[in-house]
Image (cartoon, rainbow, N blue to C red; front, side, top):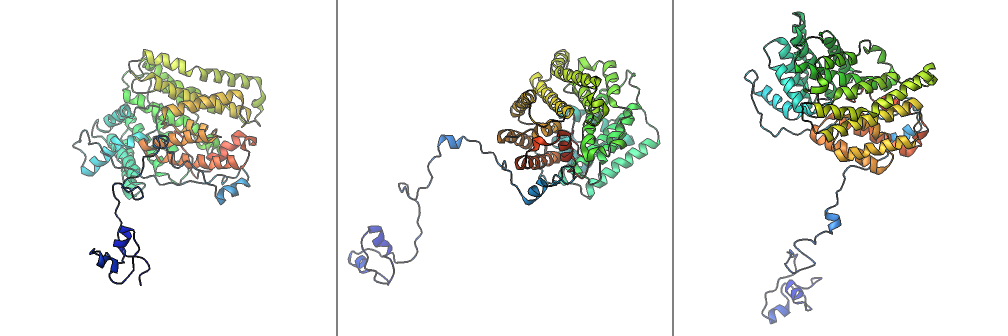
Length: 503
């Protein structure tokens, strides 16, 4: 006998006699017995228990923004690091993260006749996606793209081919990773540079060599090479090429100014990395004997860049000069100069100079012919200024605890980051990411990294994200405010097997 009634009796909500195969009640009432098997249930319009559509969520839930991937998980490695000496290079975990990259969506705007279909596809990818990963002070990558394009297609010389193949190499490594084809294109660019240099270089070819060297620098950063500091070799070579050009010539093209700005930015950021990576053990190998600052200042004054800002972007000279001076001036507490009155006066002068950055740059932008959005430029300048001020105060006084002045700078910086939403400059994100002690501040940093990654798909941003999350875990596990700030920052940077680039 079936354990339950037939389907017809259950629909009529009457007691079934459960006679098999057809119940007697259905026979007497002349109804079709639906039997005792499994029945499929379909939702009906007025059936509240089996509604076709669920109820609308409350308004507070439907408009709420859910932030994914904002939780930090503590592992055995984090606990192990808690009891490790902070001077140990393994104090922080190494990070190697794969970043999925999208295909370009826009159609190529032009198709040069001297490239085949495969190269044209790489050129398309470079101009639509990969160009956004090039680290410059200019937040408008298309100005910079125009300068590189003119240098790559100006003639059929080997120096032009070097720029073109370097563009292909950057696009390939960004799209496919450090595979054989990417390395082959890198080798083609290096071979073209070597062939061109053997014949001697005029000023135009020298500028093309600078562009190709910096593109190969970006290639090394994206390839995440395990060799310490290969990108520094290209920056150092580009510096020497720039210093070989006579800055007093009136015929220097605007592409030269863009290249100088590019090299100078990487040069300044390299000073920061070399100061802290493995306690500066590679700094002696880096050429600081002929800094780019005076060269750039001479070129700028000669061609009146302060009033034109032609192709250089967001007043880079105004930002980079005092930032470079900060990195070069700070000394360790063990240095005899640390407690001298002259040293303290110099640091105070640097702080005043940093305070005047935004005011000076706003005046230059109003006088310039380049119609840049002044609020956006001021936000970027303020972010660099505040990062430099916090770094200057922290390192010069060897403190990690918050003071009223430093706390005000940090809060102002987080307000700026939250307003601009995206920031491709890693130095301020690193400085203020290390200052993020609350969940609210950490979410601001993570949102900025995610938004910037969505636009640039840069591997460095994901590496920075993983590094900061490791730092935050250590902050939560122990009281890092008692740690020397300079040693803490050095431990963070030394976690990388290679010299990190924060450009």
